[in-house]
Image 1 (cartoon, rainbow, N blue to C red):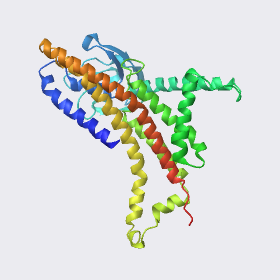
Image 2: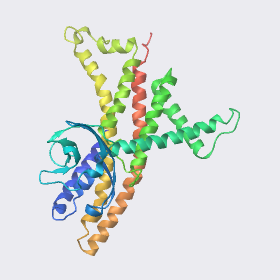
Image 3: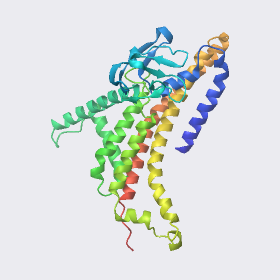
Image 4: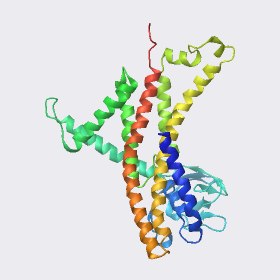
Length: 351
C-alpha cells in the first residue's frame, strides 16, 4: 500500500499548494479547515464559524502549579488575544500559535493534561458502539443451540465478518496455535474498522479522526510489539542474535544481528505509520476537495457551477474510496500483526 500512501500525500500537498494563493485573498482558509478536521482539540466543533459556530464543550482535566482543575472547555475564550492565547480560568490558556499550539499552557508552558479531548470522546463512543454490536451478537448465540439454523440479519453479518477474519487472516498468518491470539487480533480489526467507519460520518457521534491520530496507532502498534516479543520462541531469538549466515557477518562485528535487532522495532513502526498516514491523508483530501466549493463562491456563475460540480463528484468518489479503505486498513493491520506473531513462533525446518 506504499504507492497509495505516496499518491495520497502528494495529492494533499499539491491541492493545498494550489488552494493557498486563492485563499489568502479571502476570509475563508482551506488550510485551517483541513487542519482543524484532522487534529485533536478540547472542543467538538459541529458546524458554523465565529459567533454562530455550534461547538460541543468537553471536560478539561489538568494539573497546574495550583493543583488539579476540572472544568468545561467552554470557559476558554473563543478568540485568541494578541499573544495567541485563548484565556481561561485558573491562569490557564489554550495556545493557538507556536510549538504548543492546541495545548493548554500556564505562563507559556504546557501543563499535565488528562482532558477528554475530541479524539478521546469519539473513541469512547466507538468502543460503546462496538461493545453493543458484539454483546448483541453474543446474546443471540447464548439463547441458541448448536443444532439451530444459521443466524440472519445483523448477527449473520457479524458472524460472516468474524469467520472471514479468523479463517482468511488470523489462521494463515499465525499458524498453529492461532486460537489464543484470536481475541486480540479480532479486537484490533473491529476497533480499527469501527473507528474508520465512524470517521466518515461528518457529524456527531462521528467525524473523529481516531486512527489518523498517531498516538492511537502508536498504542496499537505497541501492543502488537509486546505480544510478538513475548510470543517469540528460541528459534526466533536465535535468528536475531546468531542467524544462519557466514561467521564473518556476525562476529567479531555483528553486522547481521544488529540489522535483525533493528528489524524488531521497524515492524511495529511500519504498522503505526501505515495506518496513521493513510487515514490522515484520506481525511485531508476529502475535506480539501469539499473546500473547493467555498473557494469559488466569489467567482462567476460558470466557475461556481463547474468547480462545485467537480467538487461534489470528487467528494463522492473519495467517500466511496474511503469506505473501501476503512476495511482494507483494518484488514492490513490485523494481517501484518498476525504475520509478525506467526514469524516469532515459527519452528526450524528439519532436513
